[in-house]
Figure 1 (cartoon, rainbow, N blue to C red):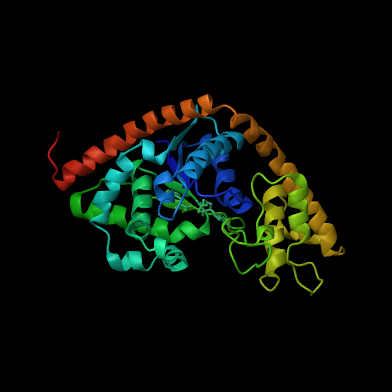
Figure 2 (figure 1 turned 180 degrees about the vertical axis):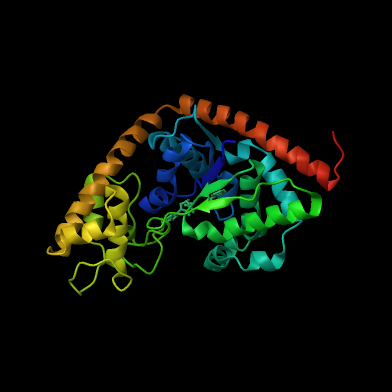
Length: 329
Ligand code: AMP
Ligand code: TRP
């Protein structure tokens, strides 16, 4: 039996190279081996305030980025979450089985809800349940995500097991795929913090669609340390983060990179890294600019994706409704 992969990103801001390395970049290799679903999580995005126009633009943008990063709609199902109503429907059933206490422990909720009054809404609180519904609807085996989603994934597993125990075997229990070096790319300005598009300091992140000069400039300005020795360890977090990106884009090991640069200044390494990232991102940037012009094609991809996704999602949802005791229509 072919295994199933599911992942999603929110259309809530410009993607960073952290999003790319933590999630999107891994999708392409998976599509050759597995049944893959890659989704634009627009329902998730309204858990914090958004401009309607921006959700529309960024949803197109994400589909274009999926395509630009090498996803083939013949192999992977690319779709928009709100086009498949079963996500919201399953989420309701799972909400009724979720413990407030467990949701209260979600670190992302704690962080985001403290940011503003508007963020303190019930949707943000139950967001991880919707994410569980996303994953469980497709009988997903594997979920490629960054480390920040690990706790949410754990909830999806708990809910699957809880439902199966209560009603009989219904859901697959999913596993995460989290990159060792790329699961958490750190801010270029503060290596204690995750690289995030919502950071006020524009130099703390590289955007997926930044041009070559911008990428190089941001890497040049990134924080390292004053120790001056080129090493890969937890005392030199800034450098470690840069080396992790170098590993991801070059395929070299940390030892090979340390050997290559141990007699050089950090600046030499930074020049090479900036160039390496820029070279690797060039193709996506160019392809994205082509795909984004063709709205009709993007609409076709998402429409066909939604059709395929709802067929499968519906099979799971019918089973769930029946087991819970809802009458057939
Ligand atoms: P989001 O932008 O929150 O929708 O995140 C989309 C995906 O990118 C999720 O799988 C996140 O775990 C991943 N991600 C976000 N930021 C980073 C980061 N700094 N490093 C690695 N992965 C990340
Ligand atoms: N919550 C994820 C994020 O913010 C996005 C997401 C929604 C997701 N549903 C998912 C990721 C299902 C993996 C699987 O990044």
